Image (cartoon, rainbow, N blue to C red):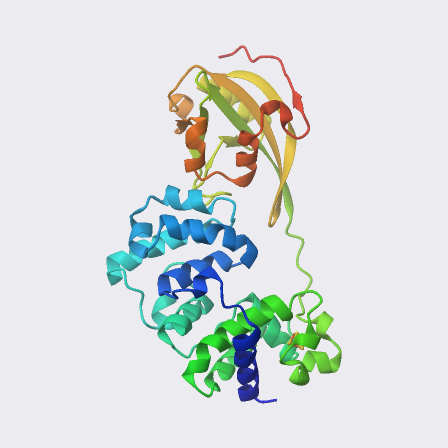
Length: 365
Ligand code: SF4
């Protein structure tokens, strides 16, 4: 096995069997590649395809993105998850306009100094758009390298990360010509996504099969190694106040950037029922119904979401110390709403999962 043989096989396979018609492969500008790379972090291509075109339609370049309010960006991101990516994208666009005149820096090192652009994303932008000979190392590429070289260390450890960067660097350095840089870089991504998949990799179709150490050793299904993750899942109950006024408007608040669903709009939330009911009273709202909880799973958190439905005659959202907005049904789609809240607001109250349980009116308005 040589690094040259590895890179040649990957580049040649990509030219013949890789993906060539993804929207971000057409008219490859740093802006388009950047948006796609950020969207693709922890997200599958098929999911990103549903968002990418719409996002580019609204924000065709870095200037429109920088000039937009962050709420508009979050609104188009709603449902993709990991919302800090959207906030960083927006922050980065502003920095690019303010400090770089809207132009992307020409090297991966400079790109990686921008907010939200990691080393691998910076390399992907610079390799595809500037022809810079730099290595990428996203999750798909890590899996290919780990198996090809039979790396046995825990894939989450810093030592394995260093080892993989070293292998990735040596590989890209061995490329015979710079014309192969783009197919090689894309080929690594495609191989990881299409052939060397997490489960049931298609080794018999893999251009690397003859030299793959994991395949030779019969340990493909044991790599990458993941040390047992600590039990980090927690459960949390959340009480949402759904305030509806006489005109059918819904009361929304903007969540803090550091909270779950940071920057998105949500019904006011509380961590226990007592506090939620007290908040409803402070607002002068009238409790109409308490709905059975619905479950929502986040990466490390199982949420049990309870909903208290209130009626309010007030059209102002500042009463009770709560700053928010009364939003009509027609306006709701312009607000970035977390998926479960979106689902709740689109459903008629009586059709909520678990059914509705009417409780006695709260007379303390
Ligand atoms: S031969 Fe199998 S395990 Fe090895 S790189 Fe190819 S798909 Fe992955």
